[in-house]
Image (cartoon, rainbow, N blue to C red; front, side, top):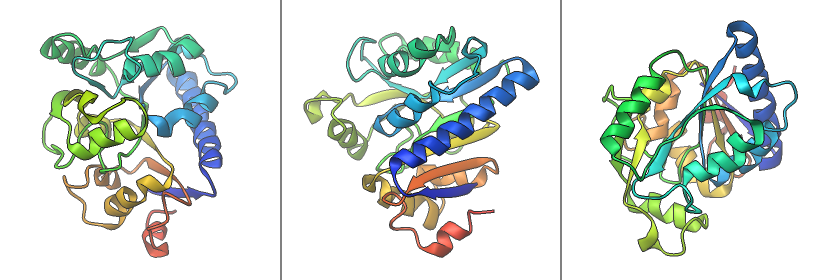
Length: 252
């Protein structure tokens, strides 16, 4: 894993999108297709906006998987992550092969279908974020680092639900669903490359805990330290609590 720090979230997004675009083009050139995992949430806005404008990406050759979705939320709900990805990625690029998580259908059947598809071939790129509680996808602390399942049903903790309300997805805390379907930690780590987009001061404590503290389930995104081909993109605000030596150990 390596960490790169940028002056602000805009320059972070520019660099991350340029790298992601190059890696997508490279995968398509080498294998005729690219399989990706896409994240959602406010931290991804600038990155996805820039990525979808990248030139010369044959999006019709890209197959996309979805990280997580609330259980019981219809696809047209403003907070639905399916809606997020349709609006900000799929419909803007013309991706035809996408596997969105139907959170309003039977979770067991949804998980079985997604698992069958994601295990057909390698994943080239995973775009992820890190939650204010250190979560990776919706794997809140203490995260399950052991399951070999591709997707699981998870209970969302109060910190996670508060973040979703704070980002404006829900009007009240009680509106935020309590359960979700999430890609597992081990499934995320199977990606050939992981690009983590983590801007803003509200993520600084989680960044410090995950990359300067003890690695383990109480800091779910700390597991990224075990993945040799992960780049964590921070801005000065999200990196503010990391000491120089903590950043230096994750730089080439």
